[in-house]
Length: 184
Image 1 (cartoon, rainbow, N blue to C red):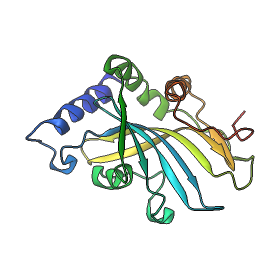
Image 2 (image 1 turned 60 degrees about the vertical axis):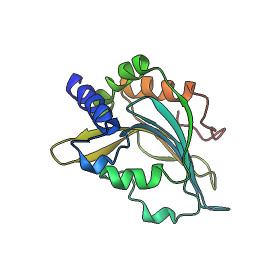
Image 3 (image 1 turned 45 degrees about the horizontal axis):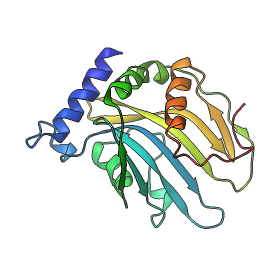
């Protein structure tokens, strides 16, 4: 647990440094947490928010891109992940790094949590996904950890750590929930 946090914090410090030992980060702190909304029912919509390891909260909007071009729930390089997250990016605010460190410590436990069985809940509502990321420094890959999914198909991570991280993200007040389309 502490090893993942330490790696993420070192990555954040490394990525923000003028000379980086991880050239793939290109002076961008790695993503730690994300809220993503997609919907292709009416008009292509693909946007969200992410928090990097330095505590910066950003919004992003890739609605003009083809949703099928982005690999979901797969391991990603930093460049692949940032290709999505930096599209029409705007900084929203800085968050408490102390609180973020506490949340980051929960990510390994959330990664070991089980997901509930997907359930059809709504139609044409899209998907609102709350996720965290773990980083495999040996392979140079980020792995998404699903915390909660609302919308057409719903599911949630059953670990207590995942629930705590979700509540932290929800308390930011940036997610537009899909009423009546939440997991039980």
